[in-house]
Amino acid sequence: MKNLGDLKNVGRATLQDLTCLGISSVEELAFQDATFLFEELERRTKNRQDPCVWDVFASIIHEAKTGKSTNWWDWTNQRKALQKNGNLKHVI
Image 1 (tube, helix red, strand yellow):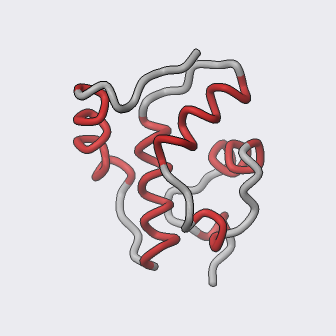
Image 2: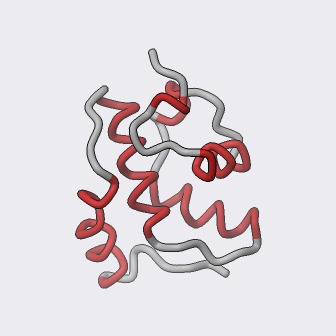
């Protein structure tokens, strides 16, 4: 299995975010939820995150689960639908 840094949409900032969230392996990432990670990152950093962070989380979770990489922006419409329905909001 790949390392976190090998996933398509994981760069330095995302690696730092995952470390902050206590995720250190692709196997751990596969069991995560993008909305939970996004909101928890805001709680832990006490900073508002760019909504695109959710898109990145969704894409890397998908890759961790399936082995298939996608572009992070392929998840934007799903995030926007969650925001519109009130199922994804900033906690800070």
